[in-house]
Length: 556
Picture 1 (tube, rainbow, N blue to C red):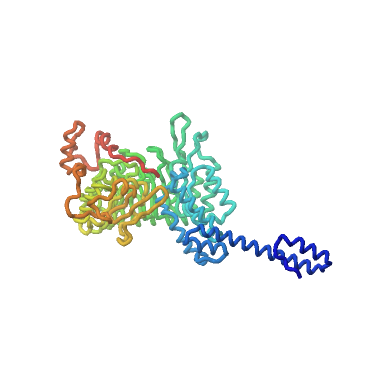
Picture 2: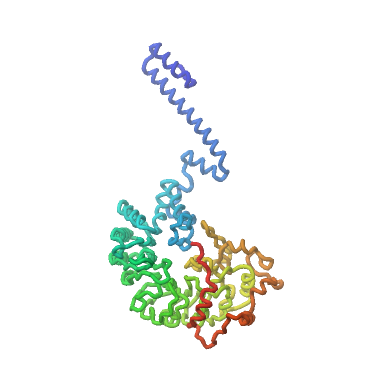
């Protein structure tokens, strides 16, 4: 039987067999051999093309590409789903560093993290099955169309509901409301979403869905929280662990969430609400609550808050964040400070008020306190010296403006030499960059008890870089704006071979007496009355000092 050597001779060979009267069997054999030759020739061409592609890759990526082209199983294919999930976690930054409220911007950190989740699901089917849990576990809803789309997805694919762990509802109310109430369709979609998310752990509402334009031009109104939505939240009592109310930008308008909807939640351990919530004057029993954040204040009203939350019962409360400029520290800590291990005084409005010393004398009301965090006035971290001795206090974090240059040098020198309170060395005192003030749990994401062998460390996310050292947490851009000085070693510690101040820096760091003398020489300076209480301040003091050191909100 003739052997076909090239595709150009195939037609002639087959024709010759037909003329010779060859049997059908011989003809079929020739056709089969021709097909085999074509397949072999194509494989050689594909192999040559693949080798050309592999030569374009680096040596580290080439073995993986070779296994993929040859359909060989890789090491990653043998990993269990739980380990793949843990590895994928390193691709994404902690959720506390992703503020979903301003994520309408396509270049926000939230949008970049969402894009990373989607890319993980597009690698292969095995990765998709693991990464899909990360794609749906944290959801932010920014408009009615997203609410409708999520509701339709969960109705069509009910098994996805169990993957949702956290929902942020941030969809603005329509610009014009005829009935001054929610759209019935939107409420029904939110109710369906909550009913189908059977493993929901965290629920966040901003003010945006509840603040709308009134019937008169230039007026704003607050919509009532829908009863059907409150009932749907109550039905998640068996799974809900965290509820948060975030301000939406208005200084005076905020929705009133019915606390009765979450009191049945038997696993509720974290709550964040407005300090002026109407339920603060009622008797509320939260037996499992461990964390309470009241610092998301909306205004600096001088209303009497001394009896707010006095009748609340929270026997397991361990972490507390209080707002500044409210003056109810004493009554609140007397009622709920016995079990506190973490206490923070925050100012989410970034308004540095004159009550900077008022909290120092109430720390003793927390006999089990281990970690104290507070806002300093400007860069005055020396306020820590005014904290009374405390037997259990171990860590102190201070929010300051731009911990760099001369202030950093001075702080590092004092940190190695001084003692704040008995048992609390300056080495356990840190500075937190106020530019990162929007990260509500910064001191938890970067804990003060991190092993020194892991520090310093730099954490990068799209549009954000954070440096974590043993003495503080700050934006990495400060190292670029203020390069390393001669007085600092590579670890950021101050050397002690002499003064580290330049002539210009000495003028920036005046003593308190020199500062008072300097202010006394100006016409606008009025000496404070020494008899004034720390918790009260005059209108003149408010007008002249409340906004003088305020910093613009950092880009979220």
